[in-house]
Image (cartoon, rainbow, N blue to C red; front, side, top):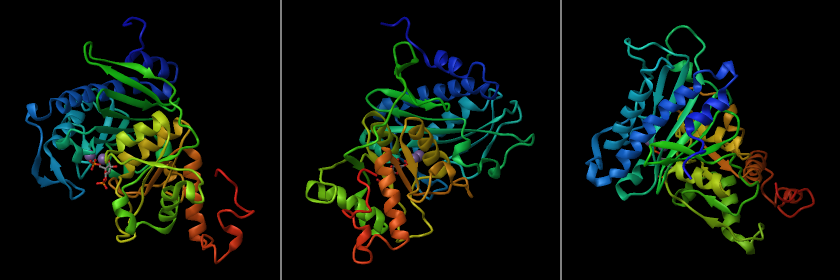
Length: 358
Ligand code: AHG
Ligand code: MN
Ligand code: MN
């Protein structure tokens, strides 16, 4: 059935119609979708495209860039710089904000993105993605780095593309989270997953357990209880997944629930987590909240974090709301010393003062 389907353009025009504050947002997201289509074509060619492998350079994060990190970054810049919609862009692959070239008009939106998320998976043909976040630029002057330092709750739109067996675009303009699948024959994104909803409860968690010895005690406690399963305080078995592509992990959580954690490393307090606030954690947090889930640093709502640096890292806990609430509670109990049963038996997991399912 090809006719009567809702294309991305139709959906976005309908979602933003009549809202002056969102005028032009549909056009910007259609530019992002154009970049996503060209990235999808590059990624799917694999070794045949000659794009695989690393370059001899490091990005601002000190990570060796893959050829595709560079090419996907260029695809995002080229598709979004010309239309008079964007005032400036921040990318994981660029140390400084990208200024719109003088030949193009400057618009009112700020775009932050991770052009290729999970790029360590590229050479092994495992799913990767693109993540993006849209803020409003209110000043008349061209934006600088401080213009992007807005809490995530001010995002006007956020989304990701997942380059998996099919290419999907999942986005929000603050009116729910919706998924589109690329119909390669006609080159359109088609609405296939409207109004995604994350179940509040789950028995599936995702974390890189090889870092366990570096986690803070609240995360060790939570994961330890999940691993203990039926024989522990949770009294049920849990399942674990780790794809090493945040986009793929978040997508799984939007499809069937779950909790994803990338906590800070106690071994290195300066390196607060691995994921970047502006173009990884914040857009994912908006998508998750818009689907009824929760996103936290473990010690507060992700979307309320006040950024201090465009490339800053942040601990991430997101997904099914009851599990995120439980992990936040474990942080609170740890911070006030109440997580040790021998310190205060009243706060023990099975005590009178514990509410089940929080
Ligand atoms: P990027 O490829 O943009 O650097 O991001 C990779 C991120 C994220 O996608 C994933 O969850 C995490 O790094 C994987 O980390 P590990 O290497 O610890 O598995
Ligand atoms: Mn990434
Ligand atoms: Mn990346």
